Amino acid sequence: MTRDSEDGASGFPAGPALRLHTPPPDFDPARADPRLVAGHGLPAPRREDGPAAADFRRAFLAPPPGGRLRFVPALRPEPAPRPGLARLEATTRTHRGVPARRSVNWSGGSLAALGGRSLVGVMARWRVPAVLTPPGRAGHAMRASTWIGLDGQGFYRNASLPQIGTLQAWDGVDGSPARYEAWVQWWARDEANAPLALALTMAPGDAVSAILTVLDPATVRFNLKNETTGTVLQPFDLTAPGGRRVAGASAEWILERPSPLDADGWHPYPLAPCAPVPFTACLAQSRGPGETTLTEHDLARASLIRMIALDAPPGQARTIAYPARVKGDPRALTMTCGAPF
Image (cartoon, rainbow, N blue to C red; front, side, top):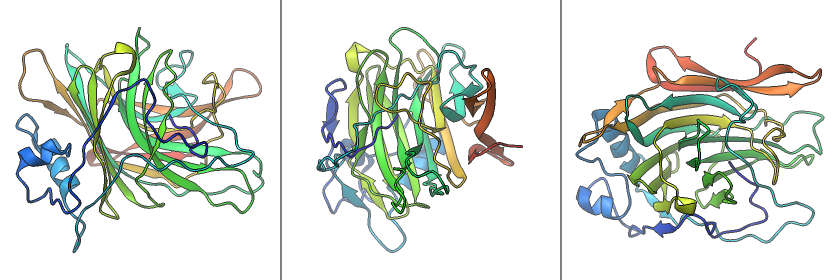
């Protein structure tokens, strides 16, 4: 996933082609014709949606109590580089050598498509976790990211992973505050498509809603909203880099510890100690051959992945983050930093 944003590239990487949508500043999607809403790139309920997806989309378009939605540009203005800080990037794939239910950088849920179906949408809501700065860790940058994506599991030719989420970071300087930001990436094997910082601001405890919608085999629409502030990021579409296509093989809801620039995936940052991360309203949508309506999937058959650290002595692993299902809610997971026992 994510890279630090101080180095500041504010344009999308050259790989994925970008199309921005610009709703008028005074636009009220909750009252507008759904066709006009969709024309602005916003997630209006569609004829093919099931009831849960339609409800999620309607909630996304709802204004905050007593207020109106505010729209902000997707791209963040380019900041000046900060001296002494290297440019940082990260990978988002689980490492090839780690079993699917364990990962050196992922914790969360992954749902596989079955029976010739293709996953064509994923959505969720989560709260931005507060970074709990540990004592005695000055000089050690720490990271945690939370995101949803498609096609993150499975090692196949031309694999790629469109994803959007939030970064929680501490730069390892005594007295410095943690940083919280939004980002997007279309990771692709053998492509240098760095994550990009987005302009949606957030604070610990803010509720964030995100939707990825496959428009065609090579194009995904991204929608992101800060529910707490009633702020919606400018919608945008990305085209898969390098002529790739969306396989629709899996959907993910993930807490991750990203890796520095040029890391090989085995050496991610230390996981920033965070408050538990509640993921709610988790939903994936699939389509079978010839179908015109979408099937909804909760987390009932999702595989759960715990994050491990490979410590000395060699070959031993310890759990550093883990997901847990929420009793009575098949669309919820709670991600916890630390060992479960």
